[in-house]
Image (cartoon, rainbow, N blue to C red):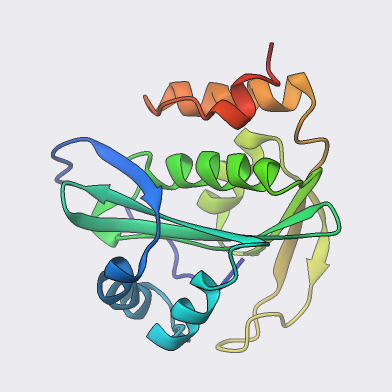
Length: 191
């Protein structure tokens, strides 16, 4: 996963959060949020190019009303999903936005044919690591010096057997915990 700054406690949550597919109309808000949370942000052109690759990628935005409060993306190849990025507005952290995004990214990964999922997370980002562990991701090692901005290492995490009933049930339990609708791609597998 991309290098984000350590999450801080959020505040001021009003209205329901909806997670929807990212479209071109979201790019101004997404790139503004990208610049606010990442030391080496992707450009608008990068996001636009990513959105054109629908056969193996899925991007989602979390919205509170019309305001984009988070986004994430996943790439699927050879049966493996790689969560590329998850970002949440600093005022929205610790409010379930990242959980909702990960639920939707994993559901999209299943729809794109993924069997397993992986990601990288900063070694110092205990909050993000805890989030991924709730979904069943386990640590598989560290990539030393992975992040170019400061040379910090990345913890490699894997979640195996996405379509297994127990895995799907765990993902759906996270959706239920934050009051997020159950994605159909996972609900069928959890029974």
